[in-house]
View (cartoon, rainbow, N blue to C red):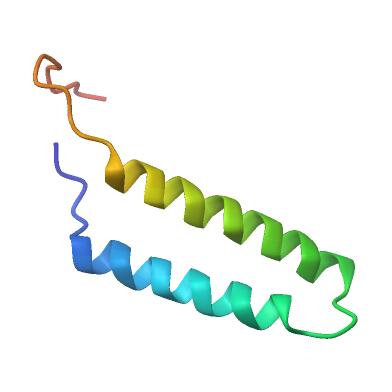
Length: 65
């Protein structure tokens, strides 16, 4: 199944997320909305990394949604 994304795209997104979370984490007296952004971006980063590590199941058929 193809979503039109390449490994390079995913890698670029992960790099940007890491850059943003690093900047937000090191900002002194971070307002609450930046703290929440950091939490959400960290969750997104972890989720993307988990999905990348998944191996497709051979017995699944393509679903047309």
